[in-house]
Structure formats: C-alpha cells, structure tokens
Length: 115
Ligand code: AMP
Ligand code: ZN
Image (cartoon, rainbow, N blue to C red; front, side):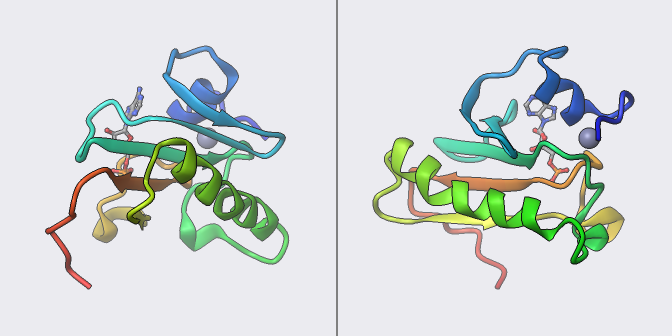
C-alpha cells in the first residue's frame, strides 16, 4: 500500500522522477541520486514496508521478489565480476529513507568492507 508521505512510494508512483532501471509487478529499481560506486541502484518492493525490522511471513514475498530481481539487474548493469547488496535498518543502521530498500553497488573493486 502507498504511503503518500514516503519518498520512495512517490518515486514508485512516478510522482517524483527517478532514473528507473528495472520494474516488475512487485519491484521497482532506480539509480541512487548520490552514487557511491560506478553502479549504485536502489531496489525497493512496491508495497510500503518501512524497514527490515518490519519484515514478516505476511510480507516476505516482496523481499524475495527484490532478491529475485537482483541478478537480473546486476546482469543488465554489467556486474559480471560481482557486487555488494546492502540494507541499512533504522537509526543505528543509518537508514535515511523509511521504505525498505536494498543498495546494489558495484562496477569497481569495493574496498570499504566492514563484514
Ligand atoms: P539509506 O540511507 O540506506 O536509507 O538510503 C537511501 C538512499 O536513497 C541514499 O543512498 C540516497 O542517496 C538515496 N536517495 C534519496 N533520495 C533519492 C532520490 N530522489 N532519487 C534517488 N535516490 C535517492
Ligand atoms: Zn514507501
């Protein structure tokens, strides 16, 4: 369900422009406005889920759909040598937009590894 106060819901609806790179029934993906690598894509479920902490058995199919989209998007973006998928959750995780999303980052050897 759309949350009219949510930036990513408004991007999904087209109300706020984005550079879309992938869309299916359940998933929308677009270029991050502040890329941290040559390829930096934000992958979101179309249904509004605030964060990883709100994932449950009732909405986890939306998360599965995002992860099914990842290899498709990665291939389209030419990430044949690998990539990183990142989720920031709530305040301590550094989440700034409260609509669940996965950062797909690559296009170079990523050095800033913390785990
Ligand atoms: P996070 O900090 O994990 O919540 O990630 C939010 C991401 O959304 C950041 O990497 C931002 O650069 C990105 N972002 C914010 N506004 C926009 C926008 N209008 N279009 C594309 N990406 C955005
Ligand atoms: Zn939303």
